Image 1 (tube, rainbow, N blue to C red):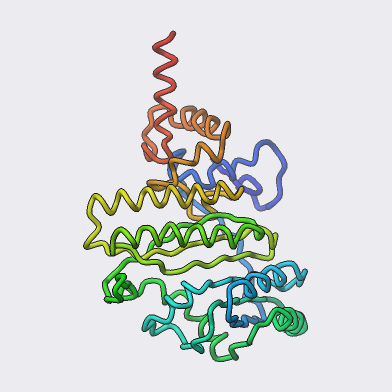
Image 2 (tube, rainbow, N blue to C red):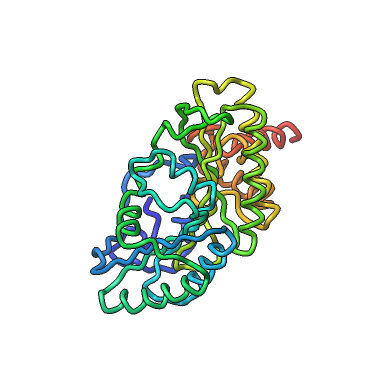
Length: 321
């Protein structure tokens, strides 16, 4: 069957029936197999402006990113806030990172796309807002080069550090949530404390900092992510248990602050998945109903999202009958 805008036709707007595309978004292979996808393509923008601003504290950077997101600039695509832990992490001998002054404790980077005569005037407005919040522009070299290199830096294995500062090979892992702007500082503090507690117990884990991103769509919802280095060669059963518990605690913080467990990665992994029923409430029961209806024999990615419960319920009902 076709799902999505236009139901497989050349039109892209349809209000006939349920919006089935959204049913299959995030199903993680539990409802079927995608055999074909139609993408909507956009031309490359004529102009791009991607300034980086430095701050000597997190609070000023936080207030700045909120002001940028609420400015109402049409060409604004999004803004990212890097906290002090992330800035310190990026300074660790990263070949893709352009060194910045030592007094930089937080970063805000924004990006705008559009036509030249739109982007440049709008950029002046964003620069004025940033300056009003105590920002220092880091210059064209850092702004253009750092943004272009953003895809190169997260796979660097020798960024890991033990508590004593020893360099160890670590892999990158992240936990993401959707958090409202108001709750960003509280969630940031709580998440760093969870990882700090991990580090007090073992050198297997390292805090690689947090970032928060908002797009032009709302300026309210922030993809909020904490990155954790894991020394996989030392990841024994005890460390794994600590990690799963920490992931559950991270998810619990998001829910306690009226957020969502995952903004984009999918809350389907060990730890955070345990709290999906808490977030969705009756919606999780509907997920079980849909799973059982579309996959009666549980052959589509069994075990994902705890959806095996759908068949336990059916068995219990049958037994009672």
